[in-house]
Amino acid sequence: MSDLPALDVLIPVDSPVRRLAPRSDEAELLALFADVPTSGVHVRANMVGTVDGAATGANRVSGSINGPADLRVFRVLRALADVVLVGAGTVRAERYTPLEVPAELRAAREALGRPDALELAVVTASGELPDSLLDTDRPPLVLTTGSAPSLDTLRARLGDDRVVVADGSAPGAVDPRAVVTALAGRGFVHVLAEGGPTLLAQLVDADLVDELCLTWSPQLVGGPAGRVTHLPTWFAPPRALTLAQLLHADGVLLGRWQVARLGA
Ligand SMILES: NC(=O)c1ccc[n+]([C@@H]2O[C@H](COP(=O)([O-])OP(=O)(O)OC[C@H]3O[C@@H](n4cnc5c(N)ncnc54)[C@H](OP(=O)(O)O)[C@@H]3O)[C@@H](O)[C@H]2O)c1
Image (cartoon, rainbow, N blue to C red; front, side):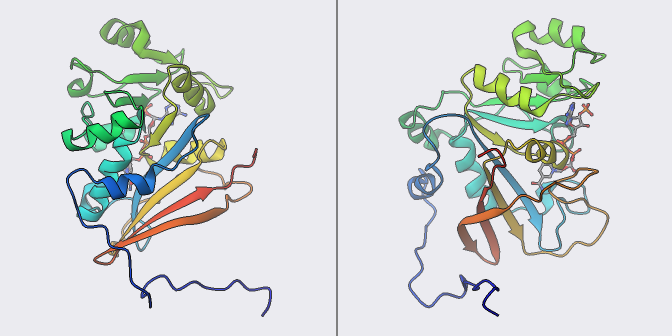
């Protein structure tokens, strides 16, 4: 049995648990998640799944499987990011609008040197993004391909500087590495990837993700929902995760894993 790992029992615990009560500035929670490398690009993913592995509930959005505990971490992770990176499928399904950092988290954000505004960056091949996102005074950065049918329309609508061509070797597909490089080139080095499963899988496959925050929602939903990563091929090799942190509230488990980078 000596080659089997020990199992750490985290919950229930037999020593006093450090309890983070909600507070408007979320100072303690911010401190927990703020310890990221001070140089280079850091890509953190944040996702939610049910205990049976579904990335959505029956209504095909994650809103039906997340909750207040997840929301606390979700807000804090956004406050710590320069940019939120998402695929267009998520923007459409989850009805993204320009991102706002809650007023009570802005002081911490400023103290950490993050920019005032939280940028939204969307990856799309089709360029089909909702008017409610494009027709605002804070449109997203759009990362697309040189062959996107709506490239000229997007440029005319958003301005050349908000439309980034990030082609890779696969025709008609954005290259995840070119995305992260383009964001870093604009000074967005704290990248928060909020999915969806298709984009996240490509980021992982391209060895670009440093950290995964994953909330397990205490539900079984069955159904045809996909998982938090979606790729037609297996990750080769599978990416090893190291558990860095585990929070708990009312049966919701909020994990934070460091992702082993192949190139490291
Ligand atoms: N559980 C969670 O934490 C979580 C998080 C986010 C989303 N979701 C759920 O996931 C579902 C959406 O899943 P999804 O996998 O379709 O989401 P997604 O990855 O956000 O979107 C896929 C779309 O993103 C664009 N895209 C992705 N990679 C690309 C590439 N390399 N090149 C060009 N375009 C690329 C394409 O957009 P175009 O079609 O415009 O070309 C593609 O159709 C929704 O039901 C949403 O609610 C769950």
